[in-house]
Length: 411
Image (cartoon, rainbow, N blue to C red; front, side, top):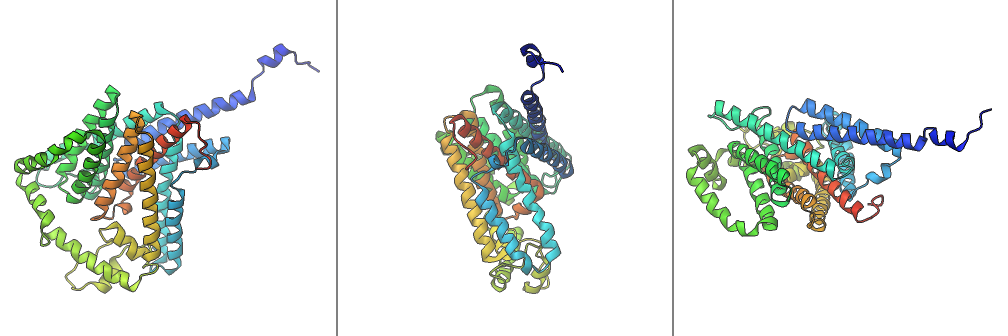
C-alpha cells in the first residue's frame, strides 16, 4: 500500500479547489450570458427568451452546486407572493380557465429579477451587463431610425408593433440618462449619453403620448437628483420643441388635452365599459383572461370595437382579478417602489450603483405613468425589460450590502 508523504499529499488535486474552479467558470458563463440577455432585450422575443432560459439554467446549476437558494431572497418577495396568491385565488372563478392557466406563465418572467439580481457578482460584471444593455438599446434605436427614414409617413416601429417599441425605448432612455448623469467613468458616461440621445430620438418619433409622459416624469425625477439647476430649462425646451417639430407631432401634443381626440375618446369609452364589468365582478374579477368576450356583453354600442385589455394597468387588474387582485398588485408596487427608492438613497455616494438605482426607480415611475394608458404588464418584451432593470437594482443592492458586510440570506 502506498504511503502518502507530505510531498505526494500536496501534489494531489484539492477537491475544494476544483469545485471553486468549476463555480468560477459557471459564474463567468453566467456573466456573459447576462451580457447577451441585456443586449438582446429589445430584439426578437424568441432570441431573448432562449438566452434568458439558458442563463436561468446555468444560474440554477450554480445555486444547486452552492446550495445557495436561501441567498436568492430579496425584499421584493412578499410583493411577488401576494400578486401570485391573488392570481391563484381568482383562478377557480375564471370565465376562461384554460386561458388563465396559460397566462400564469407571465410570472416566470419575474425570475429575471432573481437571475440578474444574484447573477451579477461584482462591479466588473455590472459594468459589462450595463454596456450590453446600452449597446443593444442603441443598435435597436438606430435600426428604428433607419426604418423611419424609409417610412416617414408613420410612427417609428420596426421589429415589433409601435406600443412595444415605445415601451422598450422609454425604458432604455430612462436608464441610460440616469447612468450618464450619475457615473464619473468617462467611457461609460459617453456610452450612456450616446444611448440616451439615440433612444430618446427614437422615443420621440414613436409619436406615442403615454410613453412621452412617462419619460417626462422620469426626466424630472432624474434631474431633481442629479442636475437640479437644469430643471428651469425643461419648460423652455418643451416650448421650443413644440414650435420646431413637424405638424404630426404638434397634433399629437394638442391631443393630450382633447377628450374628442380619437385615441382619447376610445380610452374613455373602454374605461367606462371596464368599470361596468368590474361592478359585476368586484371580488375576484373575470379571471386573468383577454377581455374581448366580456367586453361585448357590456359595450354600449355595437359600433364599439372590443378590446383585449383595458389600456390601464389598474383598471385591467381590477377587471380581471377584482379587489383581491388590485389590492395585492398595489401592495407589490408599493413594496417595489419603496425598495427602489431606499436602494438609491443608500447608495447615493456610489456613482455607478446609484446611477443604476436611480435609473431603476425612474423606470418604475415611467412604467407606472405609461401604464395609466396602456396594459404594459401584459407586453412580454416590455415587461421582461422592466424586470431586467429591477434585477439590476437588486444587484446593486446586494453589492452594496455585501460591501457593508451585511447578511443577505434573511433579506
